[in-house]
Length: 232
Image (cartoon, rainbow, N blue to C red; front, side, top):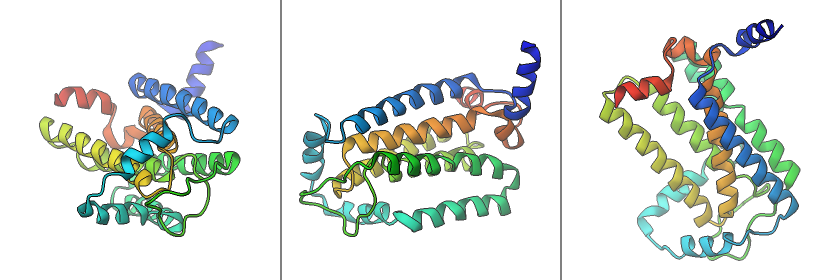
C-alpha cells in the first residue's frame, strides 16, 4: 500500500530534490507563522519603525532611478511582466514553461493572503510612493523579484563556469535585497511585509525547483543543487 502511494505521488511530482524541499518547507512554515502573527497583530512589529526610520534616513540621489524602477512593477504592470515572462519561455524555451508557470503561482498565494489579512500600509513617512493601492502584507514586489531573479539564474546562467555561476547567485541576492529595502524606503511596506514577501518567494520557488516533474525537462535528472555543488 505504501509503495502504491509513493508511486502515485511520484507520477505527479517526479523525483523530489531533498535540499530544495527542505528549504521550501522551512521558509513556508516561517511564512505561515509570520502571516498568523500579522493577522493577530496588524500593527507594526517592534522592529518595523526603527528599521524603516534607518532606511528612510539614507538620502542617496543616484538610487532614485532604482526606486522608480522597482516601484514600476506595481499592479497590472507586474502582472503583465509575469505573463510576458511565461509567454517568452513558451516561445524560446518551451520545455521550461511548466516550471516557470508553476513557480508563478506564488502570486496567487500572495494575493490571497494580502486580501485575507488586509494589513494597512505605512503612513506619515518622509518618502512615500504615490498612488499606493491595496494592502501591505506581504510585499508582492519582494516575492516578485525573488521569482524573477531565480528564474534568470537557473534558466540563463546555469551553464556558466563555477565562479561566474556563483557570482550570478550573489548578484541575484543583492538585487532581491535591494528591491526589498527600496519598498521600505518609498514607504510602501513595513520591513515585516518585505520579510513575508521574501519568505513566500523563496518557499514557492524552492518548491518549484524541488519537483523533478518540472525541472527534469530542463535540467535532466541532475538537480540544480547537485549542479551547484559540481560548479564549486
